[in-house]
Image (cartoon, rainbow, N blue to C red; front, side, top):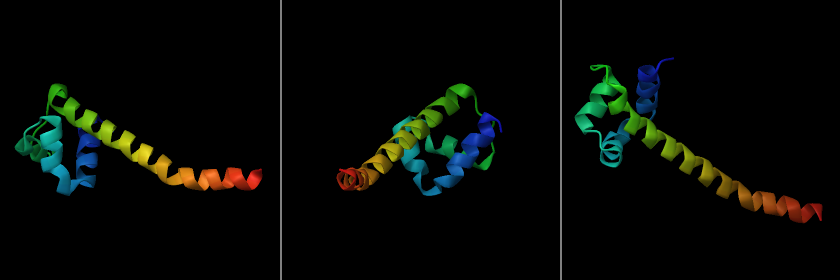
Length: 81
């Protein structure tokens, strides 16, 4: 899978957030939508801020998943003692 296909797939996963992606990445909303629909073949310099946005969101999601699991881990450690 190439970069363009990867970005389109990821944008498909967050259809309702294109305005937020635009605002937070600095890529115009119309460009985000055109990339998503495959109307344009963007340059790497256009796609990179979107990739960076996804990396940030993925890191935040992983961190939040760790926080959610932490109480269970603490309980497991307490039981082990």
